[in-house]
Image 1 (cartoon, one colour):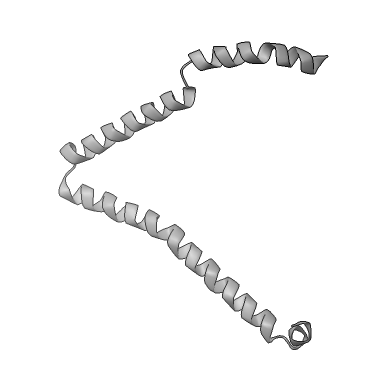
Image 2: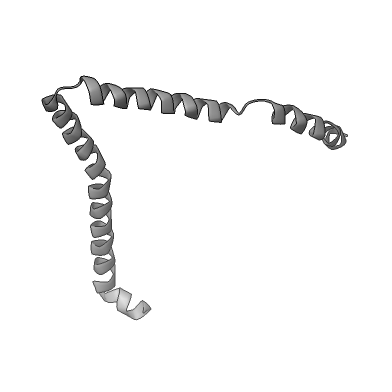
Length: 93
């Protein structure tokens, strides 16, 4: 009974949602506006030494995930080599 009720209201629900503005779209536009405003502020009102400090910090933030990924890959390779060099692993292969 509940399923048949849902089937009855589904077209009406779809029609109602189709006419409403997409909330996610609005939030993304607001965030884009805020981000653009911040970039304009940085471009027009910051001194060169402040810009250099911000750029250095952004580069540090950008490099950190890359370095962590490289460390994880190195660790996985070391663990793989350790497993394969174990005497019992030769019998499994």
